[in-house]
Length: 476
Image 1 (cartoon, helix red, strand yellow):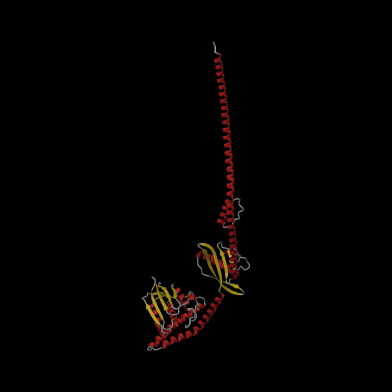
Image 2 (cartoon, rainbow, N blue to C red):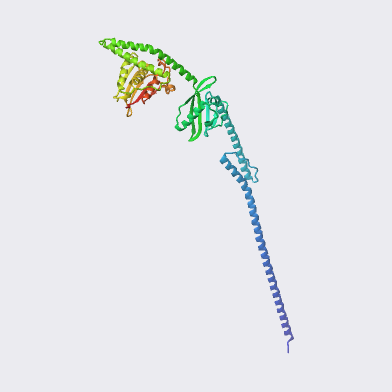
């Protein structure tokens, strides 16, 4: 027989299994749904994070670009202004207010620097204008004429005297090219052509021009001075020195020389004729008297030659000395003059020394070289005080030349006139000494030596005497 109790238990167990299966399926379904929901949520969160990161990165880049632009713009402006200062030395404009504190500090410092530069620039401009006005005032009030030509050949400064000399007194010449000035003045044309030639030949002898100025004729020496600094050509300076007074004095002296030379010619000629007649009539037995008469005739010849030179000087022909060349020895001439002047040296108690080395003969004018020797020895005796010493020496010089020197223990020659001692009419007073007659002796001596192709120069110190040296070529 069936067991109802067992059947109920089986039915209940089966129902429990079904319920359990349903619960498991329900749980699995819930878990699956939760899994899907988690995945969807994860995707949404990840997408949101990605979008947020991208937006944040874009925002950061934009913010960085904006900040860098704000930083770079004032720095770039500052760099541009500094470059302008470095290139053109111009004062940069001021910087405006800056947003950042650091940049504002830089801007303040930069503006302070710009203010100082502006102040210094204005100070320099004022200084330059002041110097320009000062130069213009000096140029305008100079006693002599002055023209400053710049490196481009244009007139930068010119004063009234120079304008008159160049014939530009009615023309504003500043800024005009010097080589094409609007004037046909003869003095300008001569100066212009001479300067063009000097640029090619490079010599600096002054140009002398005559101009009618202030109611009379004036003489101007135009000196040319190229201006350069560290190899850079700056221009040319022309100075117009008024030498009218000097030329008037020279003409007066030359007229005096001509007059005195003419007046001396007649009595000197009479003395020479008388000495020659006396020589012819003097008995041969009077040996000493005839020697003295020979000295008189020799001195007459020297003085006569000196008068000829003075006449040449009065006619402005001092440099055109006629040289009659012949072969002769210099040593005997030195010995002869030393013997002639020994009596004069003894009277002044001056020790006269002669040291002569063997010398070759030279070709030249014996009479004129004798006059040079006589002049140098006479000057030495004139300026040597009592108890002093005069030394005459001669020796061969460089190959093909001889040298003789006359050294004294006199007062020496002052430095301020030493360079002009060989110029005509150059004299200087020395207490206790009588000066030469007209200051022409050394000038004539120099012209004679130059005409022989030689040179004459002096070494002297005040209080230590002078040494005159003559060097002559042996010649052919």
